[in-house]
Image (tube, rainbow, N blue to C red; front, side, top):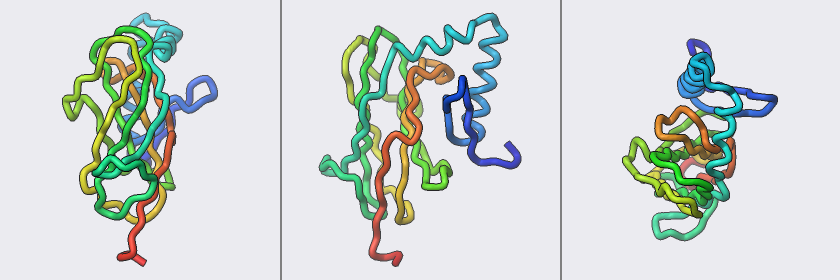
Length: 171
């Protein structure tokens, strides 16, 4: 934590979680605590069958589909997902990273007090970044859904989609 601002948690040879070092380390430590308390690793991993992230699309403030935005634009991130079984208290979120994998910012339904549906079906989560002042360049999003405590991931997609920020003012 003292030397890094970004961390990757590898599990069974694949990236399980990537992001801000404090977030990744805290979730890893929570996972290890769950495992020590007698829960099996298989039970932890099995939760991925509850939900799947299907697609991410970006829209401007007028809900026009776009992949390129001007500095200071409002960006709506629409996440299509499938809930496969009834589950209460789901937490969904989107994190933005730059092209060097540095965490920029993130939104989630717990912070914004957005209640997600709990019945099986296909849904959309819309998170809005108001007047996002990013430097011109390419940015990537990670998308994740967690059970109600925000500890156990239901599905997590790292660098799932990208968008560009353009500006004639900087160059």
